[in-house]
Image 1 (cartoon, one colour):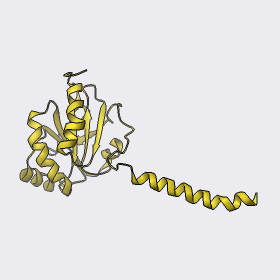
Image 2 (spheres, one colour):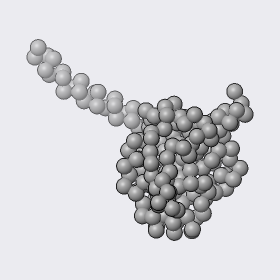
Image 3 (cartoon, rainbow, N blue to C red):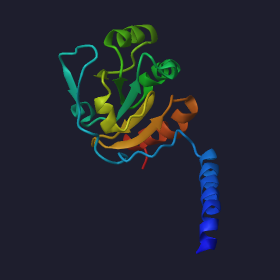
Image 4 (tube, one colour):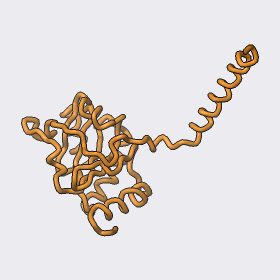
Length: 179
């Protein structure tokens, strides 16, 4: 029994070292989402451009959708927005914006400055709905299929490499271009 008590701290230290070592080789962009392949969480949020109009899950009905989470205070969102503006017109999916914990006037000014590739923008000023979606911050992007299921979640700004590797094949599959 005394031997076990003496070895316990050593075993605990080795376990901690193993966990930290494993963490060094993990990708922080790959945080598994419990929502993958599940229906999108129900929501109702004001339209950024017309706050009297509410937006909800009907946005996704029968359409492949890319839901992009952004905010005017997000530095990484600027570069991503420039990229999205170049690819959105030729994308086989609708782009919906999800404005996260932002001031409406700041968000509108940001869109005027950097462009608006979205067909609609839901404004979650308090970040309450974001919790249901498992949103950690900005930018984050979801791909939603025609049946309102989340098929992919991307954390961080979308780069050209991300777009080619992860988004293009998935969008082709969801749009029935490949099996």
